[in-house]
Length: 515
Image (cartoon, rainbow, N blue to C red; front, side, top):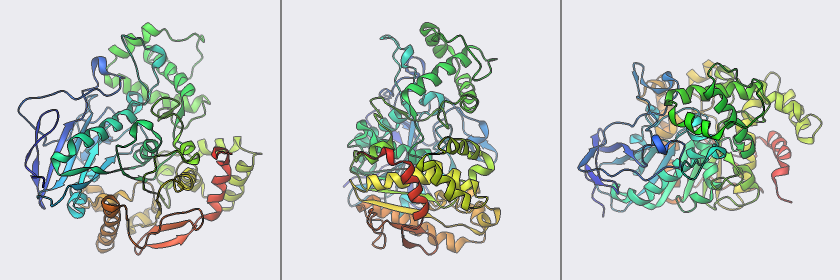
């Protein structure tokens, strides 16, 4: 029996939590690695520093540099920003468990460009209390801090590693393995879950050799399994980043003399630049990716070809070499609607589809989506999220029990706004944070329905975390019957509900299938 006390001993020192309403207790802002500052900048996460006495962990750690409005925790309060962001938070029921509790480790989204654990909807209190689990939410480096390949400029005295964001996630999972028992959690029963870029991270961790053994279950919500950058392209992007860092007046993608960027000058720039300058320079890479055809949507994303990610998540799934771990995975019905309003991916998607013209896959896409008159946002959502996910599901289901879903639920407000069951809306149900200013607003006039849905989704996620069973009415997916849980009020199971569109994406990705 593990006693839950306000003060808990971790490997780095004692941490003090805070009791909250509803018999809950939280420890916020616990460092799981050393601050990635100075010589640790652009390095793999290093062991956390030790401290004496009790560290009061009653506030979230700083967010990584991003646009200020993205760090709002209330309509009038911003979360502080810093490169010193490698912290995690533990949420638990404030009671003595009869046995160690299942652990759920959450990875936030944000397109590998933004996000923070302090976002109010990620408060793990409700999920932890309702499902009698320990919830951990983590932060990691993204954007230029987490996904630049600077290895061309390294020396033995100043090394640089790749995929720092994924390495941070792996370090956080390793911290959980070593320390979570002190918080009443079971280190042998850890489910990693994430949404959007966090869901993509989950699929990457399933393909990462270094993540083996760190978790026993996985939940990927709205992943984009092909949101990756090949290592050769990543090095081109890093060189452009250095040119932009060296010359702030430079137009992204402008011609240059073709010579490699001087390594000594690169190391000097990377050491001296402020965190804010690195962030601002990283933003310019978005313009660069749009102006110069380098074959990627987002220039800063998991890098394929190093020791952390030898092959893409989709390639690993198709080859049958993802970690054989039970998985819940799915998408929202109208993934692309959110982006069509705020960040329209459709032109880039249609440009890629145009390049595929004349190929079997490209012609199939044109035939299916031209029939869906005016539905450009569905094409964008399918291209980035649902299409690759459907291929990933087929591959992973051959190595481990896989439960596939489609989230259809919409509140009246979401329906009236035209967003429908768009990207991120399932987070309202997963965390059940209805008292946050965003979630509460979306649930207006639908409290009873939303409450039923929250209970159902949390029950399924919690049941999966506890004993890998999301409900007797939810059969595992196989390529024979393709059973998909349609999450709604009420939910139902359909066989291959989007067969025509699924076949298009499988045809497009057939080259990823061995043999």
